[in-house]
Amino acid sequence: MSLRGLGARLRQFWREVDWRVALLLGPRHRFTPAQWTRLDALPPMSASITAAVWLNILASGAFCVIAMRQFFSVTSAAELLVVFLVSQAIGILQLLMLRSLWRRPTMTRLYLLFGLYAAVWGASAEGMHVWQLHAGTAREPARFMLTTLMLGMMLGALALWIMACWRNEYCDQWLREQDRQAEALELARRLATAQIQPHFLFNSLAALQHWVQHKDDRAAPLLGSLTGYLRATLPLFERDLLSVAEEAEAARRYLEVMQARLGERLRFRLDIAPDAAQALLPPGVLLTLVENAVEHGVQPRIDGGEICIRARQDAQGGLCLQVLDDGDGPVPGLDFDQPTPGATRQGGLGLRNTLLRLRQAFGERASLQLRPLEPGGCAAEVRIQPA
Image 1: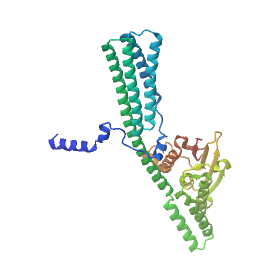
Image 2: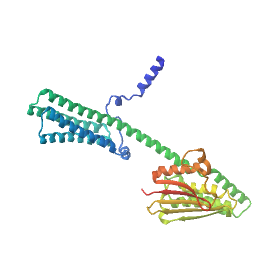
Image 3: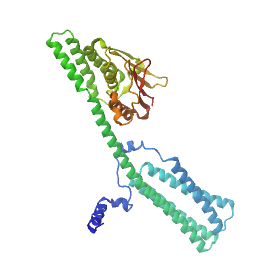
């Protein structure tokens, strides 16, 4: 590497270093009350870390007992118990400080806890000195014991300081990642709710124009259905969640338009249970499944087919939403859960986006499954487990 390249790297390194962190000057990020509320969603300190701290607390207590017997010739069980309990109290205090800083890694809290820690440190040192004078122990063993104790507490203090700085940085990065995910979710929602398919509208308007020009009696019902469809889909652009009843109304209007165009080739029915009508869904989920059923289950068949929309609550209070058709069934091996080229077949891309939006809204409680029906057909099933 040339000297110029080395100099460029050093300059870049210098620009990237935050000296407040490098010099351990304390946590640098300040969070608003709203951000702290969001950070409360982070998991607490893990059981593994807690167990490790407790093992160190117990080990330090055992060390103190052994050292007191070795250097101070303390053999009284009562005195050894006091030493052990005092060491455990100091260790528990460290654990409480660690938990406090884990939950709220702020500069103010770190300084307050360090003030308390320094007071305990000073009291421990003074207590060891008084004990040494009272017991008449030689100066060198007492000094060694006191030095060991102080080094242990200094290492504990340094660990608390570093942990607070790291946790503060982690919280900031977590908030940034959550903001990025929220932006991606909002973009996905806008893209999904904007998917009033252009070819569907163009074909419907072309059919309407043709029927109007030829004074076909089907023009008026088609215009009414198309107007109702557009009115029903307006909430898709305005809200994050819609009820199943609202989603079903948009799907019914869409099916009415398609029925006006396809005639007897398309038949449909809705079976929405009252207890499921008020369940919430991301906008356009049901409509996407219905469009997929029409495009891949009804239109390819000369004699058309039937679509059934069902919504029920299961025994646990979760939502079960189904879109059934009597077409040729799903493509074998279709895996819309993965971004593979094969996932674009039979609406796989739309199904993948639908599953993504369900997961973003409900997490692992939501699932989307495509399965064949007997003797023929396809069932698209959405399940949302209760919280």
